[in-house]
Length: 109
Image (cartoon, rainbow, N blue to C red; front, side, top):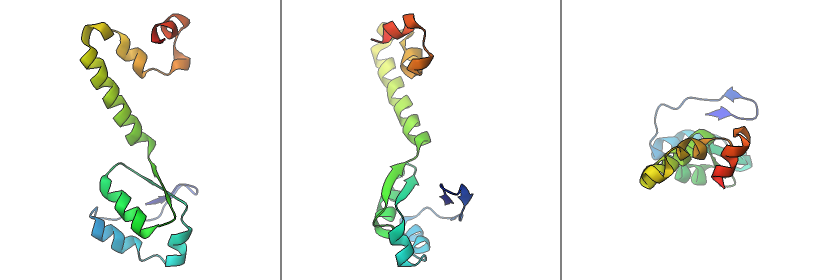
């Protein structure tokens, strides 16, 4: 666990089971847990249940690394399904539009 605002490590929890995470996180006083506004997690489904139970007022945010990993995986699957029609398009799909030349931008339209 880390504090994203202060950019510091808070704790390392050895387990990832829902029960143990709930037990460890619930050791914080309830008034502090209720003040937590946002929690950033990876996409493991068990985290959602834990956060909803322990930090009832927190907004759940998925970390950018795992979101982009999923987006890139899906884009690659689509590109592969399109086959030869998309030859050379994989790079365009995965590129930042601002970094493309004018000609390459036109190809994405």
